[in-house]
Image (cartoon, rainbow, N blue to C red; front, side):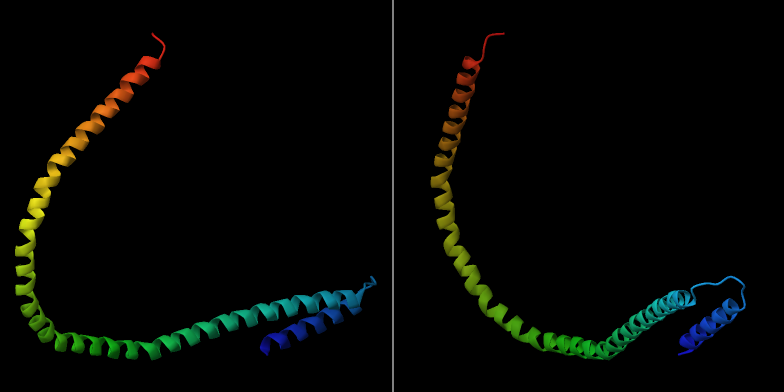
Length: 145
């Protein structure tokens, strides 16, 4: 509001100064230019106002959400504390079964590993031999130096 009053005052002063000059000018064109300038300035001020309003709304939302997130955090911590005994009991019940299962599978895994080790070593040796053959044949194809 103040800005538009200042703009109107500047326009009136500009018109008054121009009317007293000896040189004839195109006053409507100058008024249109000044009007466009002040409209652009007003739009810029309004956009800054919108930005500050948006920032205000964001800050207000943040202040409203912060207590809610604090409460949620408190409830989550309480639930975690309440769940600790249940988790501990379940772990106590499952641990012997897991140990038993591991004890049963380890001999089987060791046996499988013992059977596959010679196969893996043999495959590695064959691959190395194949690679060496390819290298030798490639060298044979190269022209002598």
